[in-house]
Length: 219
Length: 219
DNA sequence: TTTATTTTTTAGGTTTGTCTAAATTTTTAT
DNA sequence: ATAAAAATTTAGACAAACCTAAAAAATAAA
Image (cartoon, rainbow over all chains, first blue to last red; front, side, top):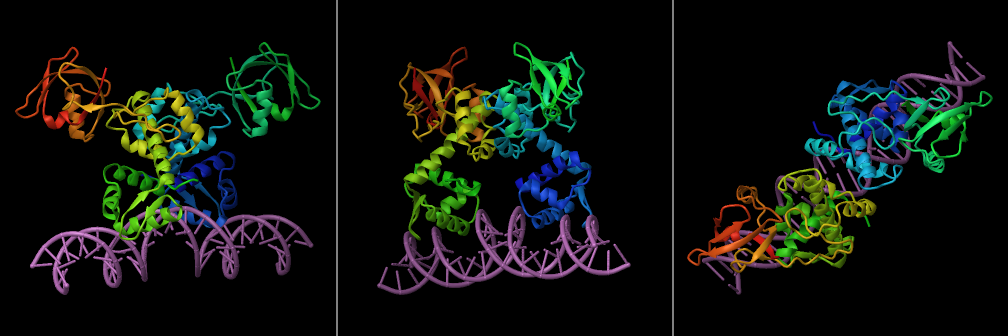
């Protein structure tokens, strides 16, 4: 089955919203896609006819098994291209999203298979988000936020929850990126702020809010 | 100025037809694009309004300077992606056209600049066709067909005129591709056929028709 | 130079994906 | 429980890009 760019964008957005709330609402999807609720309703009908959606009028909706598989395939393409843009073309990791949004709609199986091979089967994209395999299986990367990690354990940054420019600016300032090794040296129970130590850098203190958004895995 | 995928496809096809005939006709363009003459007329009006076209009703049309620049930019993107697909992803050179047709419509200047850099500024695509630079300038590759090349001169294959699967099959059989070094050992005036010698391979004879379609440059 | 043929354009539809405005259903608040 | 508010859907339009069929213009043939 092949889908239009619009259909794919809807499927992908529903998928992302489902990660947070089990069943998705018309308004939230309209907001996510920067479109009108009426347009969403129109598309929902089409996706339901194409059997990608469980949808009951006025009651919300969610992708069914087929829809999920399609979504994972789009996510796979998106993240592989992001990885390509950063590691091969030298883009900054916060500048690749828009371009990957275009590249992800090229659906040649052969292309994606060869791209994956060329990139050496990466597990995560440059933001640390896992890349689903051809069958839609998502590699499990055991990760916790810095807010939860025990003191003095060596950990490596695997992903960032909030990918806003403001957050990325802050991370850049502290020279923290995916793959950075660090250690929590102290945790202040007063406000949940955390002192961290990155190799060869002075220790610094980050707020609980920031700590909750930096995910790491144990070395 | 930004253009839709459809507009870009029209612009590109007009550009290609112009290489052969100075002024293009509605029917030939409809044929090239596998669409109807009426649809072509519709689009011509739009492109004329956008000031890309010199067009007089019933009299044919051609790209103006602006249109030409846009076309060259699309050709540039197409050929860079073809080069990428073959040299980096390992596609066969005759399997990349359709995918490059999709990739060429992603218009981020930054993307194409970085891709060009990553590929190390190639001069020609895998078929030997020249890649226009950012300003639309086409590198001149001094080339002649094997039918014209003098006997015993060492030459390198630079491009292939006829890119049909049949031709590519034949070239594959003789292990001839872009970059292959060879020498004309004999030319038979009876039928214009040519004996050629590729390094480490037995000499072989190709017809005049084939010889005319293989372009080479002198080493 | 008329007539016939071919080419091109116009007129009027269709589909996809969007929109606004109005109607309907659900949820919230009194 | 009922009224007010919010969310959702329907109805009806619109633009882009395509189509068919008919009309108009250009070209070729008698």
